[in-house]
Image 1 (cartoon, one colour):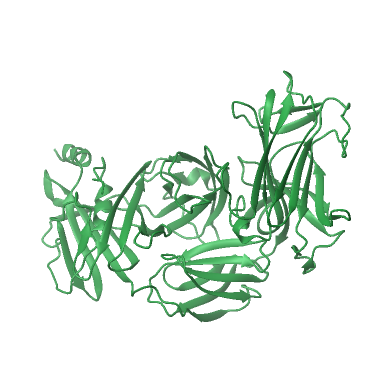
Image 2 (cartoon, one colour):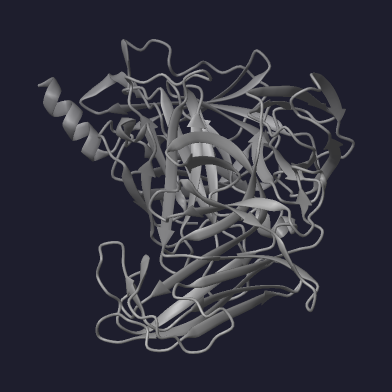
Length: 568
């Protein structure tokens, strides 16, 4: 195991929360007989999340750049309080905070949109309504470019040729087919079209056109739906939050050799090479699976049904209404399809807007000793919608749930095991219910409370308690499991729930671009930890039925030098 030697105080937390051992005897707390206790500056609301590879489900270990948009963008800061709306991470984890002058609530949420970009991955975004102070967690899946893709997703490339003025010299067609459904999507670019980027610069030479299609009735595909299904829309200047029920998504990009992306098309010549469409603007055609449900009729789609066409630019994460499209039927191929011309490139989405209520029903889960991490997945009965969340206390209250039938799937987040499923007609109207989970975790989990304090040699009676640092943990004995967000440390204390004894866990924290982690195995009366970490400052106690770890250790030289110089 690697030795952890961080340059700042927050590593006190990292060390403390992995030293997880406990006993049944009472031992004197180290915080007694201390003259002064100083709490580090508190952070009221922290937002922490991870970015995972869609193929592996694991955090992405390469540079990810993220920008924050939305109405609360000006209220985003790093964990030291510096205003900041752009971050990078190299380990797939990140955390930032709301400024202390804002207190989000259900009736007045702080709205942000996280846009994530990484080389070798498709850009993805996630809108978040922060409705409470404390800890807020998120997870953004990212689709790798090239290689194996999740089932229901297909991608393809083609070459578009332009001259020195950025004008296409030949017509080109990119066709891709999703294997499981046989659904075909295509983009036709005619000759005589000038292609420019968002700043009006022309793209010249051999350009690479790429198209990715997401099957709307494949749950494996829609869980990676660009931007998620809880969305912000702009319909002719009217902005609102809503839920999408999808009929299919296609991401289309055209890039030059330096990676610049095309944004706009302008027809500069009407002389076209003969093509089936014979258009002067690019033509996009997307087939729709026959078993797609039209929520406006409650029936499978048919010829003449209408669906809204939406576009999303990668730097806005807002869906813009384009037009109402008519679903057509090709008698030769026996496929339903929609088709449209465009003057710009983006992610294209055929969706119906679904209604939702502000607060829905509440489910209380039984059969498991809580706190314990459960992964809750909501999906449409026929796909077309997806949302997931994690709960610890066994109580799930639906916020802004969709007002249409969904399937609820409950998973053990430690093991990935499916614990139960139910079909619900309406999450807004059922009130309250109890749901007993019959499948137990491999052994009863325990809950650990870590209490951490630090000191400096110049003032050993002054103890400092950390505030705001995020903590994740992962069961690695099981071979593979999700990283689980435990929350933030507050006033020097954090609870690590759902720990299984005799299992190896990896614990980590992220702070200002750096990731720190260690591994520990908990037993009934001791813990095996990273051999490079000292346990001499650990005091354990069992009080009021809780397993509490008291940790007091010396702070880093960097922090102590600052504190000691100020005390002179």
